[in-house]
Image 1 (cartoon, one colour):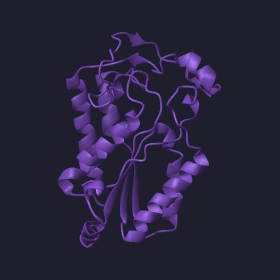
Image 2 (cartoon, one colour):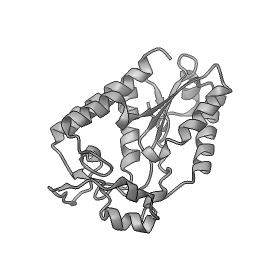
Image 3 (spheres, helix red, strand yellow):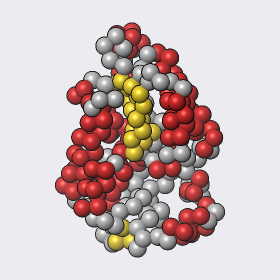
Length: 231
């Protein structure tokens, strides 16, 4: 249930019988030939599809994240670690102030994970609250399904290429790109762009829609379980 489709009185009524909420986290960064909003699109969709049959409130996706390595790619927007951790803390504070006590953060961007420490720190001073941080693409069941489908999977490769992250009239390569030397990602952004080229870390650019739907189904089930199981 999207908070964008509710007015404040409906939220007040919701909180009389449920105190769960989801915050999806994404980013705006290069994803080779996929949307710059890939991480945001996926986190938002996972959160909403998982929550829909349970009627859990989903807040708007935070569409900017921590992505310093890709600053040389036009369209990529980086938020500093310090600022991002403060944003996450204030978002959780805001939910808590209204009565939300069980909060699931559905993260769609690996660069955002330092903010999990901020969430843990916040939780340490709010003992009556419950908070789960869920990197949906790296969760055990999803990652096992990805590896079983094709172990050569990475940023901006086939594993992020869903029908809803593709762009119209953009043709995907049918080649398998060699995996990047990850030691090279410790270079300045301009050098990283030279190293990566189009931005794919390695692997095929696209797999069948059937393969992707199978992974997606696992992602929704795994995320929904986090909402249903004991907190």
